[in-house]
Length: 311
Image: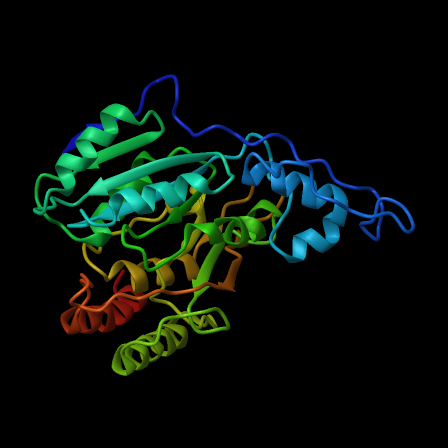
């Protein structure tokens, strides 16, 4: 396994400036005052967020997913990658646009279409990028294990290398963890956001697998197979993951459901807190490069049973 680390002087992308908050409960500056954006617009999303919180108020902005992010928080974005030459540049661009301090980790699972050459070039040029190369194809689960192992941020999110999921939703997804409401957050393609209309049988299979998983874990998730999963680092790095392919989804769900934090600082141990939020989904067809197939569905079925009773 070949690892291309980022420069020692730039492990993460630049942090946005602290975001002030208007103290007025109604979010207005003064009675009858007119709120105007700065002349010339905003230089960055971080500046736009700062202006919105200052003028609209913290409570209102929180409902929109605009909130204070601690200056020392680092989000590790783990991107498993296999034969994504057409999309790798664009997904990295979109991840970098998110106004949160980030550590970007790409794990190439022995791509054969030229993706590896692109990533080698990017790793030498881009100081915020950490690239790990698998010398043989092992599957998404194996790539994620590698990425989780080298991640150093307090919060870790899974991002596919295709363009099916939008990194612009990172802030909303990490919000329950930042506000100490959750330890793990799942996205869901089935509870209200925009999604591309595609395969009926895929949708039915996803819902069936989620239902079966819920029966064994006693959770009430709506989309166990979703890509977007967010973890406190101490949770995901404490779980012993074994699935190499798409069995990762039911395995991590089963193990998160029974995860307990040990007693600490005089406080008793507790179960992992899990939240779910709607996410948009721009699915691909098989002609456009979709990888998952019927074999992976049967493997997920077996993993739901296996990781409930035998591991």
